[in-house]
Image 1 (cartoon, rainbow, N blue to C red):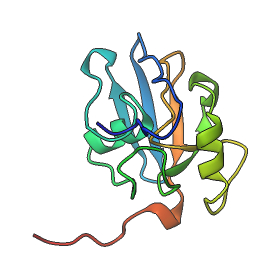
Image 2: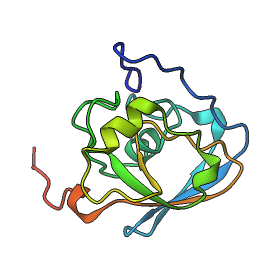
Image 3: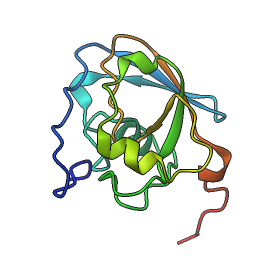
Image 4: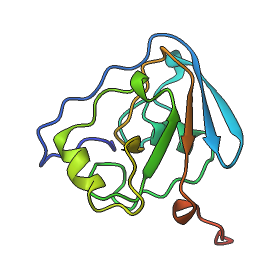
Length: 135
């Protein structure tokens, strides 16, 4: 399962206990998150921004599989950042290698909203896959 890196001393954050909404910008797509339905994918911490995005079919790059070993799932939490657990030292180290880092930057695989507020997440332009392979 994604989210846990065996080489990092990290505890998995608690899942939210109440429903909330997460809006992905600039896509303008809002997802109603039901805590009883988490996790929705196998990517990142259960209930993480990456988990929710992948479950909703929103492309959020994550080269390491969501285990906090790269910075490709870098997002900017525009609203509701306080509802996510604090970033671990390992997450902050990974963010150091991400382009365009801001004070409210997080790794989508690690940030788990607690449901106390709706959140707005901006996926940086360099992180959106504008071309998809056809199978």
